[in-house]
Length: 172
Image 1 (spheres, rainbow, N blue to C red):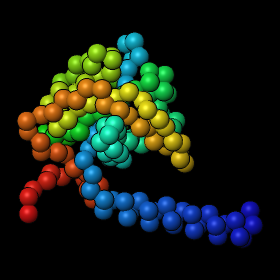
Image 2 (cartoon, rainbow, N blue to C red):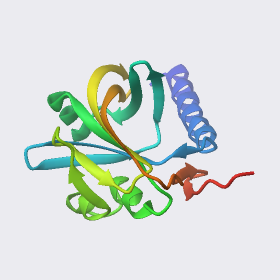
Image 3 (cartoon, rainbow, N blue to C red):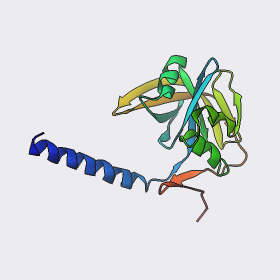
């Protein structure tokens, strides 16, 4: 490896580390994205999610392109999206990879949407989304979903990820 290549690698590594530090300051609602095919259910905790448009209602979620979840979303043409309540930290941790993958759905109250995708009861909001598009970027895929069904909770106290830990929201 040339000295120039080593310097570029160091710079890239430093940039990635600085990026991670900067993004730790970005507060985001902890969400779970799931999909199912037959008896197989998969899901992942995400904070890279946002409202994209109101007409038509659209949201965007970022999923690791290598994850089984990404291939199931494509195969099934949709996904389920849930914004977690402050008391659903165990769900967030399970779907973030803490504990065995096969036990993730033991956390929380799960049902199925008519589409077959897992539906988390008691979340701030849960949506059954049809896949409307995707954009590959780096090691992730941005999936655009059009909610077909929405379940809103009366209680709307989100679980927030900020500073590499879970928090809640309090009015100023």
